[in-house]
Length: 162
Image (cartoon, rainbow, N blue to C red; front, side):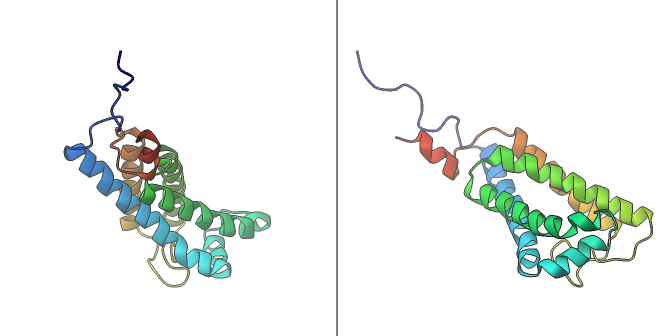
C-alpha cells in the first residue's frame, strides 16, 4: 500500500476561464475596498463629517463608526487581494455595499447635495444615480466571489499544498 495522498494539492482546478474571472474579480474588488479605505484612515475627522452629512448615524456613534468603517474596508481589501478568507471578506463586502446603496438611495430621495465620501473625504463624487450603479456592480462582484468555486490562487490555498 502506498502512503501517497490521492487528493490534489489544490482543491479544484484553477485552469479555465472561471478561475481567471474569480482572480480578476477578487483583485479588482479587493483593490477597490483597500483604496476606498486609505483617505478615510488618513483623515478620520473629515470622514466623520462626510458620514454626518448623510444624517443617518446618531452623533454618539459617529466617530466610532467613522473609525471602524475604513478599518473594515481595509481588512476586506487586503483579505481579497491576498486571497485569505475570500468568502468571508466577500460577504462582508456585499453587506457593506448594500449599506452604501441604502445610504446613497436615502440621500438621493431626500435631495441631499453632498459628497459621497466614497474614496475621498473632501470633494469627490456627488451623490448620484451613477454611484448606485457602481455600488450595485460591487454587490454583484462580492456575491460572485462569495459563491464562486475555490480556484487555488490565494494565500489561503498555501495550507493545502504539501
